Length: 533
Ligand code: ADP
Ligand code: MG
Image 1 (cartoon, rainbow, N blue to C red):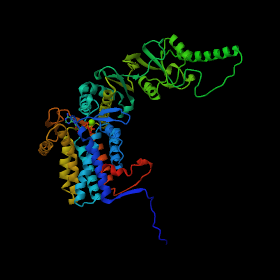
Image 2: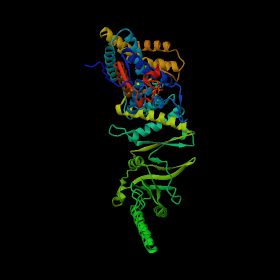
Image 3: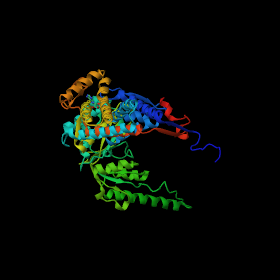
Image 4: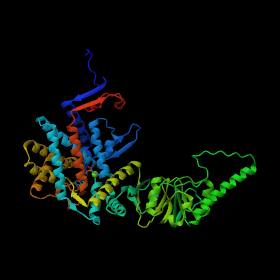
């Protein structure tokens, strides 16, 4: 044995333990929830986010705000993660999930103060979350994929309070039609809906195209601007000779040799275009380049062509037109062609687009958003994506729940009754879980300038009297049957939000030791934990 102290970790490691670690993490997570709380619901406010380079985003969307804030605190980052999960799993409810998680942690602190051990709290929360899933299964309403009206209402509920609200009827129509078109075998892949944006006209000009819109112009001005009854070739090899990836050297010593070489080159291109013409195609979409001579020959043949079309767009074009992407000249035949009623170049403002529309039973389509400025278009896109998410989730599960806080109040009420059958300390955790859910309706009220306590009291008494669809209708600032008022949300928003929020709250509660190296990750700012102190 020596007198030297034992070294377990390098000196620059920072460590927070026990209560301090726990409180610090809870505080950070709560602050995240606090920050986005004012955006919740139809009367929620927007945030303006300015990036270091001066770019501005104006949004009401929970996950967008959190992602742009560049949060560094590890516990706060976990909150951002659940918003992301909510976004990818359901497409909406990102503010809700973070708020519930924040409130669960805030309420857990009260229990910690009463000397209840974190593992007991976590256990109680887990039981409560499971019970919620059970209750949700029991009270969710079944809908069929043909309930277009209900689907439209769900789409509109997701848009209320966002800048899309002004045209929400029209957008809801577009969203429901789009999702239903790509729905088959119980599946919806939202990647099959392309969202394209055009600056110029107003948002009310936003359109659904049964086909694909490319932000590309035809490759040569000599080509026709519009093709009716389009027969479309999709190719992913270049219509040019020089392959820019392979640098070839040819030594030419006489003018005859040069001419010979050029003739040879021309012949090959001619052959390529000849092959295309043999198929009787009148439109070519090429993933690679089309050289000048090929352009000339295509124009002469009256063929419309675009080059350097993105791979993702090629795939969508195949799905929309029923064509096949051809990878070599030998495979090219009329059997691989796709069809569309019209292929046309259309100008919006300064930009030219190629519309491929009137596809029969397309398995991919496009929503073309029009709007005056980039900020508006981007915010409309976010609202439309939320809406597409809720409609597809409702179609997939076939289950919906009443919005406006109604479902949260009913869950809280039933949880409390259930809690009475449990032991004392778990019962306290269930009670706190129930009150965390009530944070949704009280915040909806607060953001609308109503008195949250009055609203909560009235909602609770209506639910106690058996009115399980009583919620806050913020179109009228009134408590009423929200199903009748058509404020409807997908079941999956709630099941996902409750399970993610509980998971993250429990994970944070169980941490009693934070060990952080002050390496590069922390940008020399010391321990990121302290940022929220
Ligand atoms: P999130 O990011 O969680 O989706 P939102 O800002 O979109 O947050 O708000 C969603 C909440 O607003 C839901 O609880 C929903 O029921 C509620 N809501 C939507 N429309 C209305 C309405 N007309 N009246 C009352 N509440 C509404
Ligand atoms: Mg929403």
